[in-house]
Length: 88
Image 1: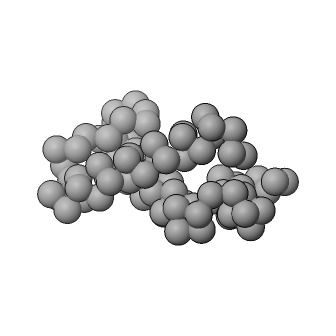
Image 2 (image 1 turned 90 degrees about the horizontal axis):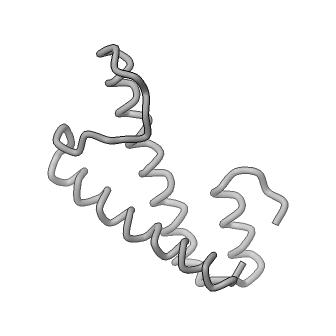
């Protein structure tokens, strides 16, 4: 797969018939949610003069956002399994 972005690479893998399309779409959505959550935290941190990092203060998230983040992390485990199994 010659795509550059992570979502494009996963979609290329799906197009090649590796992994279930629904599983790949869930991984892409989880990736989007994780990056969005990290970027939101970095905006909060930048405004507060806190050095930027990939850490997220889950205490500032709503209960729903925490649940979505937890589910996304679980979905990313599927991506790690795909890579670990050598399926792509």
